[in-house]
Length: 262
Image (tube, rainbow, N blue to C red; front, side, top):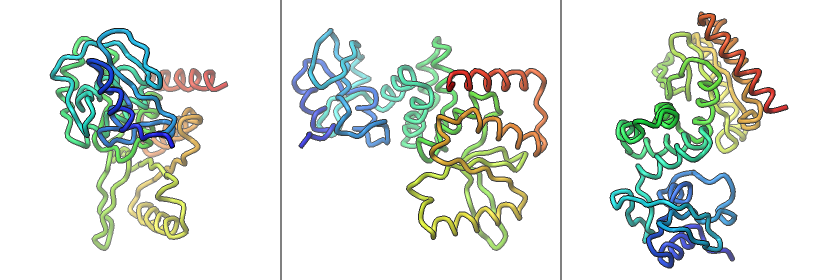
């Protein structure tokens, strides 16, 4: 049986001089939902000060300041702030931001990350998109798809007080236009009871004047352009008046996304 990623990271960081677990491996060790494959198939990502070949590891040559390395769960690992910074810098933007969002929810200082990224324009823009309000990695992906599609940045965890004293929180949306977008993941929306609860909740939201667009798991990321178009049209129907340059930007990004998919 394959040892856990934690056990392998503990082994290799003890064997390789100056090595520290980094990137998604580090995020996993810090308890985040960070891996895009099963843990068994995931290599140990190591930051090492000098080039080295380590079987079973993805090695990244990096001289880490001592302040960026700590010991957690008996593993030499990059600190939460450094791990968030590295993931934002080196991973595709949706995946990097999904990890940064989780670190923000665990107390990493957003302003500190932005200060660290001063002078790195693209990285600073990526970190600026992070939001501790995302409740799951897929919600983070959803927000990034909409913003990169040219839409105004949505608020997260929108509080709505419904009649009868009922309180709900919407994943993300635009309160000024009473439009929300919610992610329906398999884990919380598959049983009959879940579906009945969702239907009742959304009926109450419609009665209160909210329009809610639900997004299934299979939409992200493959049908992101279709989603952006749907949400843009809904925003306009709800009263959003984009400037001509915004319309041009959205249409250009839709065309680009569809060409890449094709």
